[in-house]
Length: 481
Image 1 (cartoon, rainbow, N blue to C red):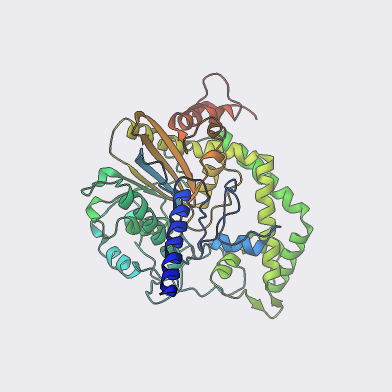
Image 2: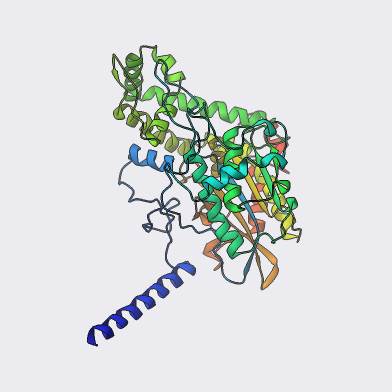
């Protein structure tokens, strides 16, 4: 009897503690990590809490593992968190495609043998994988802008083709889609049960890996969707600049940034010795090896646990990999400090951010079309957007990275709308350049929509030194820096 009483007391105490913990998390009084193994982040000020304890100094292996983003347990995230009197109005999702086969080959070495068919009993696994393949085989009724209709809807090669999405990449986005479904559809009822084509805005570049990644996320978000309701638009530019791609000043910033990268590489004698040693191993000139971008193939081997290549002259090994990866990390750090890339980013990201803001404004006015927008893109798409928003501490976009802009309406003040910005599930709203100071004089856990509108319509150009009535065309065509 005594044992039973103690057991019931402990059970009640555990229930109380669990309730208190969940309450604190809901009201944002304690941080919630996006960690895949549930480990809490150290500080809410961190832009990127990560799944394992971050090493005190730069660790290229740790950074590479984060980049791989190997699916494990489901993520916890901060998407969809808001006080009860706020209503979710629209969601705008930017993703990098999932894990892919390399775009480059290390000269005179055998290509890594990775299977790009989708097999249910092979890791990484997702419960909807088989259903996804079955549904994709019925996609003939969908509407795809040319040339998307000629692309395969899912990867299906026993030996991956260059740049092809892998099973890992499909599973990454099935997980992303299911996570967003649980939050935005089940909890917030973003789409009506009779949703139509008009409620979605779907856009992708003309690469199979971006189309397939978008379809995988969409299937996780809307399982067994009606193909007749799906319309994917084609975006010919990786910057998603549509009809506003000609921008001479953006190209000048890019040339300056590439020059900075080149000079940094010249200063790194260890990097040069590493390239020379690798070139000796594969018996090619150092210049040829460097031009083949060996880190791309090495990252693929690392993410898929495939050994680095060997020849009769020796083996490319983990030490080579660490040196090149460390240089990448140093390059990202200097890029933030020199800020040449920021000029490129502000001009490169403006068209897609302007389109997003216009869509948000229409939603705020009560129009219910395009309440869920999905851009399936590349690292060279997300990276400028992150920098333009002022998220300088955010890591380089990993495979299947997601950047989300949420639009909310205050039910108590229906004319007021606010935005939240989330990167890989972490709320980074108050790290953005347009809302860094807002939380100092406001108790609301989000940013006024007008802050974002003012930033995109004016402040992005002011940051570039534009005067008078700044606009995109003038910023792109002004003379000099």
